[in-house]
Length: 345
Image: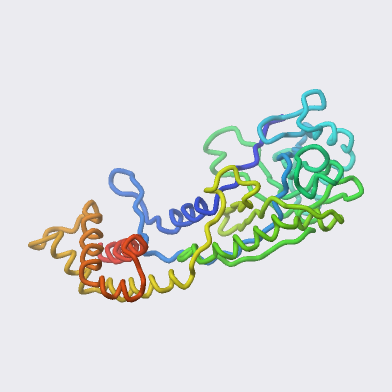
């Protein structure tokens, strides 16, 4: 059976941060079935691998016992109904792709009777896009991932047999213009999700370097701009991916990462540790829950407001001395109070 198997959307950095926070702050469900989160729980330090993001069009080749088929990002394609000539390319290289799928089976023992395997990559070069170094290449397929999708017949079976990713670094056939993105420049970066903003400067620095000189284009002897970097990490069965593009390839300013003043953040963090004491927090609790009133998470916002207002009122001289404005410190104060509150309840 031939079925479209889409490549998942690659998120922004902030979305991955939010996903990791939700995953590691989750502690269970309340009586109404709503999620309960504890922001005070520690988040992991994850190691991400970066690969060059190429400016082309997403493409894939799927295979199971029914045969193989080509895909664009949204549809199954054919040489008659194609996307930038990719289906025609696959048809003309069918023996090469059969060889790649045999290699996958030899490396993983995957059953094509019970699974569909999809090789994903970027179809780029030639006239597919313009204005980047790789337009000097003939149309080429750069592999960046392989997904195994078990055949299931029900939602329950799908939960028991979810799709999963397998290593793809060995898949290539350069003589057929089929390359592997991991054979070009890569990067490794540890991201502490307790303070993820501290890595933003490094992400921006690396992205700017790629934009100024595409490492893939350079490897083929062509100088020109690149698009950005895709960062990925698999941890405890979950794949986290995000992209960082340079200014020239961002469809909005939001997609580029703002530089972070690391010294300022460290100064703010020290101030928060100094200002949000157990004594001040307990005063807030006594004011919001007087006369031993039961502590209710619905009033967390009131507790945060009390502490923030008290800190700004009582510690303004310290803030002035350290050149910290209220708007710069509010979210850090709130986070600290929230952490202390959930330890209490």
